[in-house]
Amino acid sequence: MLAAQPKFTVVKQNLGPLVNDLQDQILPVFSPERKTLYFSQNTGVNEAYEIWKTQLDANGAWGNKQKESYLNGSSALNNYVFGAYSNNLFLINGRFDNKADSSVFSKGFSWYTAKSSFFSVKNTQTFTVDSLDEMLRGQFANAFYHPAKKLLLLSFAYMGKRDLYICTPKPGQKGQLLQWNRPIRLPATINTTFEESCPYLDESGTVLYFSSNRPGGFGSDDIYCSKLLNDDFTQWTPAQNLGFYVNSNKSELYYSVSSADAYAYFVSYKNSYGAGDIFRIKFEMADKWNNMPVTQKPAENQPAPAVINSSRNQNTVPGTTTVTMPPIGKDKLPVEEYKPNNVLFLLDVSQSMSKGSKMNLLKKATDQLVSKLRYIDKLSLITFGERVQLRYSTSALVSKDTVMNILQMLQPNEYDTYINPGLDTAYREAINKYIEDGNNEVLVITDGYFSISQKSIDLIKKNPQIRLTFVLVDPGSITQNIIDYIKQRFPESVIVQMENENKDVNLLLEHIKQSSKRN
Image 1 (tube, rainbow, N blue to C red):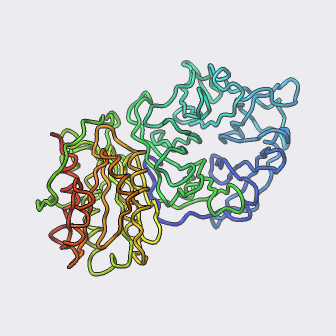
Image 2: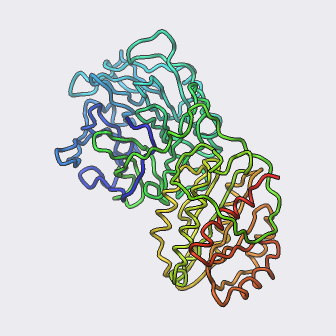
């Protein structure tokens, strides 16, 4: 049973030219035994889609795709399979007039029972959901049915934007062909003012995966996940971005899992043959959720912290542990003592950061800090040198693993130090993810000289609600010059100095504790 968030440790793989081509390949769906993969492919004519399949061979590779004739209706329609179940039962796109044996007559869904080698609407049965016609108003909807939990998840545009909805079956029914209650919109921890689509519920029925184009992701649409917290589906953890192993600066959609080969499958428009391609990525199951009681509600935001005037704290903290989705206990910045954090690391990756133990000190200090943050905290990692890159961004910190993997792979070998576009990116991120009653802070982590433009100075002065901190990592003989330069331009900023790998490993954590300490 796949009851936890997967841990990705390898590069995602394109399924290759036997499956993908210049056209769109979308919506990967597995047969019950996980040996057949169904998907929809653009025909290249009038944006219509047809259903194809590929078979998994003994070596774990997917073979030549074949058009699945018995699942395709009219070539003028969009043919989609949303689920494949026992006894050749499929959940498909469209509702049909099974008396006329002709075309789709409205948007919606149908059960299809495969009885022959060709498609026949006589084998369809309308999938009935209360109020769905009124809510769809002729628009397309995406569906996912969880047969074990008897739950239906939908994604469609209603009242102006695409959101995720959940349906429960009407009472007193048996079997697969159920009738469903009116769709209920999932809460704000899932749905935002942006687009949410492509729902997938894991085998345990407690972890939801979906795509969203909300700010703070890696690209147009990213894949996120959320954990169910109660039995009536009204409380979910804040959505967590699956990270850079899956997501890119282009769209990722239609996440699903095959328990047969421990791969996650999804559609990506990055490094494809032409449009959307189906990719897979190997994962390990990381026990990220077991410490979260299913009845616990995410903490509410609390009043903002007072201004911190001190610049350095030498207190020590007990040793850390590797944490992912922790309870909010005393070793994890208890919510009654510390406000939610929106922390943005702006990290210098110029060559000088590779000297001595600078990067090792930074990694240890970051590990100490991130291990104590909670899922209510937000974290972004931005690098600057010859170019600026948003390496990581999340609105709910579930795991430190991705952050530390990114840091481990950083190569501080760039010649120039263009801090100004980095500040611009960091402040845009901070404002987009701003916590009204929390600690919103940009930490500029560097070891040397940099030149801040008047435009950046104006940007920072216009946003006093964002705390600015400079973390100086062993600058050596130029330390005082850098401090003087910072204080001349930003007298209200905080300066943290880290020099010794053993002595200063707790300074980032201690600083954030001061910044977020409740009055």
